[in-house]
Length: 328
Image (cartoon, rainbow, N blue to C red; front, side, top):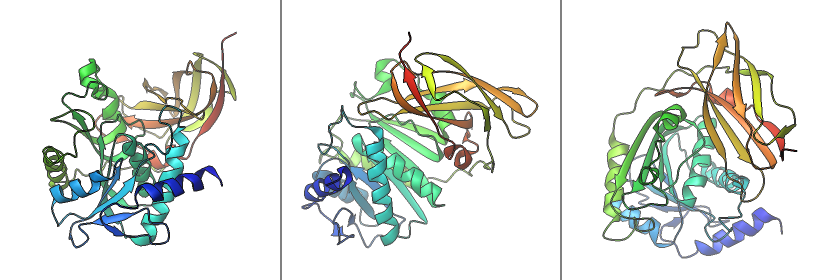
């Protein structure tokens, strides 16, 4: 049995007793709650059995809720590769697109579910679907998206709430999304779907799903094209000069969002917003390689603060792979 088949079998067992209508009767992974609702659906990736029913009740019968499950317990969170979430998200999206229109929808997830949800949003946006917002509860995302993002943290969640750790993530967040909001809700990690607290979460979601959409920033068909990049082998912490051919007339505040993704299990992504040096149509950016040896991928996204990614579809297709080796 290959690793994905094993995960699917375990996921099927975990969701066997979930509330809602089984949509994919061949696999039994997708549940639909509030099926008679008239609003565009909210796709949510949960961690536990009680969560979908609690959120569906709190949202009300007019809000359809499509429930999926994260890899919580299925894979060891501390040893899981980021690619595992992506692989499961791809599997979910194939099922979703075969059973739902999804021309307009919302996507969200909590904790380990948020890591799959961001890939679901990415894949649906790549398919031309109108993902009106990505909701991220108790997790800090790293993938930029050309849509609105609503980040939710608990007011006593010291491990997950970056503001309780004294951090200032706003400069990076404003480059990652065309619109970004952050809400602090009562409670601590793992408490948000309890009967006495799920209403707080639902109230924020209802408000955000009822708000006026911001007009999307016009997307450039072609973004920066790598003319000279790092080699296939890079020293840890090495400074790398990357040369790019850039679109015309970039504003002075245009940035490059660098996303390093580890291919090894247990690895943690590295993200940095860099200044872009421009000279006519030639641009360059100075990067620093991750300090952890191993195999990595690198993607560069052209961004502007408060507008998010400018050439997302084009940038998404440019992926460089590199082996990071320890300094000699």
